[in-house]
Image 1 (cartoon, rainbow, N blue to C red):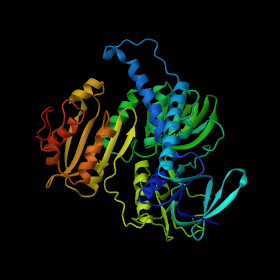
Image 2: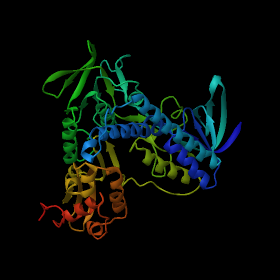
Image 3: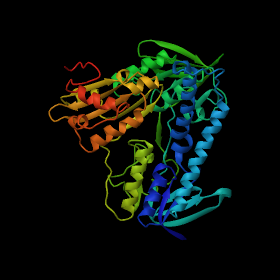
Image 4: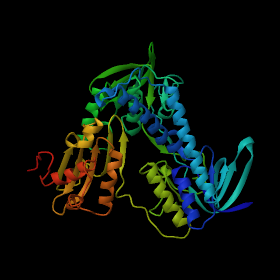
Length: 468
């Protein structure tokens, strides 16, 4: 039986990053991946979705080019070419991951892995061939898979598509019912709406993006509705049936029932840990609510076996998976480090970018914090006006006695980039006065962060503060 030092099952964000980190620490790592390197994020998630989203944003901007002094005639969206560019982006970065692994002398084995007792791994490659290897240490990084819904008709063989299938559509449906108003659902809904599809979004919880600050999601909801997207918040889908136009969904807000008609129904309600049929429990791994149970060192219940990424449940984000992969690799190679989830940024791309870190206003109040809030609208920011996107704001939630920042929420242009400053500030335990004392370039979008910090004490310069 062949032996390996560190075997990593899964070549997604947690897996390939842990392999590179192990190599940097002098370890010999082997990655086993049954599909393409890069996992869901690179092949079927964030990277392809952001690529298509960028294309439709450019298309939308060109249709409004007159406001920028540019005359553009016969502006058309070519979905086939958009898909071709998306595939090129994916291919470029998959090959980049492969080059990084090979450059770090990481062994790559293609095949489906199954965990066996005593730190052994069975690998099934093409043609039914199998081999078993003995590992000194193992990192499980098998990612997640889309959640299926127990709704009558949701398993129909026709007219039901997943978010992953949307990323590979050859034509734009005339109409679509999107079940799920979270990050994935809104992103997919935006792409298709901008391409001319009539989209209805049904979200079971009281508001879209239910984990985000309600003040900002209300602004985003209005923007979506103004752009023609129908929203049904606090609404359940009871059943899905065939109809003359394709599909119909019976919905209920708890008081009344109604029906929506569309060509297709899309389901995008998130992912669950991918632990099925991989021998984890048989090998002694503790599974809790479908996820591998780990401690702060990413150790599983079996000595010598670690886990990282979506397979552990928790915060299922690619960049969190990468950090967990690093922690797992460090501990597998003899170090003693722990993961810190206290300051994790979140983001959602729709008609407007929404990004946040820390507590929402609702969470801060529920936890009993005394709070003061600073706000600054992008309508008063020069670069936002130049970009033609003046909607949205930055909202800073603080504890007034010491100026501690409890949360920052941004809705508007480049929010995903801007949240990095807030994340660093909270990580370093900087205060509102620290942000106020930091010079921000002018003109820039980042000035809005400075002004929102000034608003906590009612001292905004470029907008009349309501806190005076």
